[in-house]
Image (cartoon, rainbow, N blue to C red; front, top):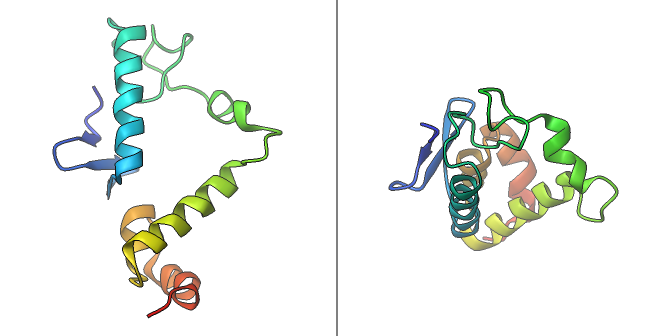
Length: 120
């Protein structure tokens, strides 16, 4: 299993940066890992996201494979990203640096983009 997943501490490392896993993301990750284990029990592929073409290799799934099912749909990846960020801000309260930790935003960007939307 990928070394970038730390279920015990609820953290996922993406491009070298460890990020906390909220309840929804943790459950989706656990569901995916179970599906992956059942579907491809003998895969040697260390990538988190694999498919039928990559399960018997060590290459990653393509960006097209990941994003193609959402093309033309109402909830675009950008809308899902923004919605997720707003939900996190509503749950965690007025800490403009929290998005930096969770979403990897630069702290100047977080202060600029989040502070006007948060009520103290």
